[in-house]
Image (cartoon, rainbow over all chains, first blue to last red):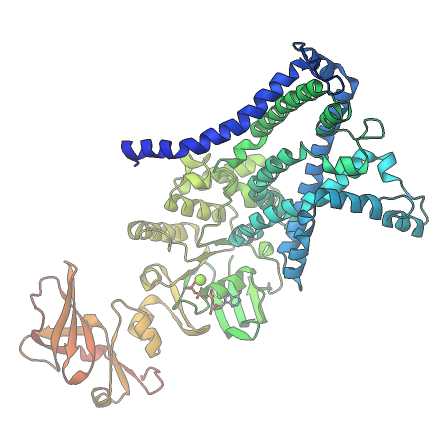
Length: 290
Length: 334
Ligand SMILES: Nc1ncnc2c1ncn2[C@@H]1O[C@H](COP(=O)(O)OP(=O)(O)OP(=O)(O)O)[C@@H](O)[C@H]1O
Ligand SMILES: [Mg+2]
């Protein structure tokens, strides 16, 4: 039990850190809120004026906003589905004993260490390019028309790239969870007459639930703000086909120099992210209880 | 039905032969206990029977059907693990119903069977809890319940009581014995606790280094251990051994005498010694007596009211009819 005295000391000791963090958070947030209420365009310096909620109205009624919202959710959802399904399968595979397992596990993590811009460029130029890309060659070898990924299915292509990057993370977390599964439980279920599919559904998957929850929460945080992959591959296009909220805000503030509109978009993005977070915690948060 | 026969079954892990070929017959409805020191292969043998390990050679028959390569689920055996191996995310009810569900039994039928088993095991009020919310003893009972509902040909227990405290262990021991009496199903029970073995078994299989040292009823093993290992392993406190000239007088290379078959006296007796530690249990006293001429230390079981202090000189006399004689390689001499 901490004594009264030690508790006071603890508070005192923590104060600087807490103040620093608060400032760190509150100043940018305050500024963003402030800018979002101004008509503030860098092309017209010195003309800033108070506009109330106009920026918000413009941002929300812009047809591009709904596209961006949909693309954001599709991007997050698509990557989550691919990484978790793939992660579970790969974790099951890597949990088996096979020759060279150590090396394979090491190679598995590699994509996670590659910078998003680099991996996106590699995907764009080496794989998905309709003329020189490997996938185009592969298609030609089997006699198919090469598929122009980034032009025809830009969002899907980005989902693929991002999934490739996040797959190792999901696999690693799920693999460690898998290794903590008590082998006697599996043996007991085997004696109880469960075949391997039953064992997966009734024993392995529930055991992985908590790890899957962690993967979903962490990945969602990062996937909501995917930016580099879009910037270096499609630039949000064609049209707004691959623009997510982050990219739309970037385009507004730094391509159209509309600081006020960008700030309003930022505030809306914060609110949406919190809505997503609340939804997630409602749906799967109870998995985290012991 | 639950008759199990092992014919020249052996098991190796890599080059290490953990169980050399052995034969064993377990009759229908028998309560058989495997005992032996740690690492002697008890669990391995049980897992071979369960089908969780493949036999390296030999053949396992269950009810006269060759089951050597049968999948565990097809052998109609139920196993209770040392760690209980309950499914943590399922309620007690779902845990117990799991084998029935896997067997494709109707929901109503499942419910009936689970509730019947829960009544037998006093688990009715815990049916909707999860294993994490139960005590060790209750978890143990759920594990047994999960085994019972399948109505298996035989139950396999691997040290099921070793995680429980002493009082609960005594209780569960009785409950399992009671269960065996009621169900009359074959049970194979692994333990390294010879008290459990003696009290529960109809037949004890003593193992050492993967080999069967002796098979017999508890009292057979107590009265006529077939070698020094079994003599020393069965019985608590353990048998006293003496070799050399004393043993030669009985025409053996080693003789053994149990603590309860030694009479103690202040005046006269066969062997003289000094009292070392005395353990007073109330109902009885275990005296550790250091024999004269460095012949070793004997444990003597005396009444609860003996009043012998440290370093007192005492005389011990063995009950001549209870002396066990062993030859140079440790085998019993008739
Ligand atoms: N998977 C395995 N691979 C290699 N050796 C093993 C394996 N399982 C068991 N062994 C070895 O087999 C021997 C018997 O093990 P087993 O688990 O059957 O012992 P036990 O009699 O049950 O011991 P305890 O009373 O400690 O549970 C041990 O020496 C052990 O090291
Ligand atoms: Mg064991």
